[in-house]
Length: 141
Image (cartoon, rainbow, N blue to C red; front, side, top):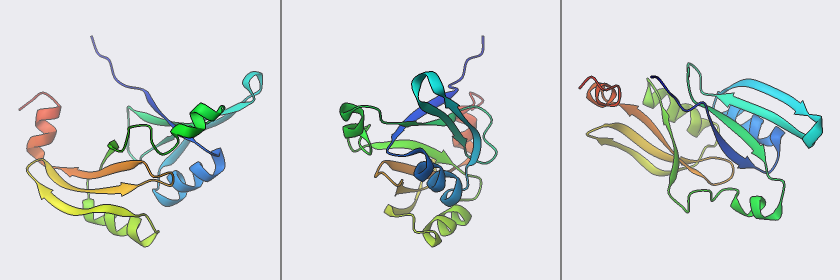
């Protein structure tokens, strides 16, 4: 049996501002942007460059309760972990585009990591994992 996470959703204020941030600032790829007339919403999916499995569904808040969760879906914890093959390339690129880092780069046993905020204040790890961490995650350690 093989399973994988296909989509993780992020509640957003506006589709277009979210696309601008994830595609324009972070360099993600716009996978799909389809209007769903029955629900008067869009199905917007973005993906980091080179990603093959899990993608991010940008879901516009449609109620006051959902609106209240924007930027705080995880109660202040790091929400998503963006793996990279070149930490310093991406770190410098994001900083030059105004991305705010709330924890500076640090070398850990599992890799080089820093924490940044998306446009809504959700915390993300930018992480270049070590080879041993990758092997461990792939079950070949």
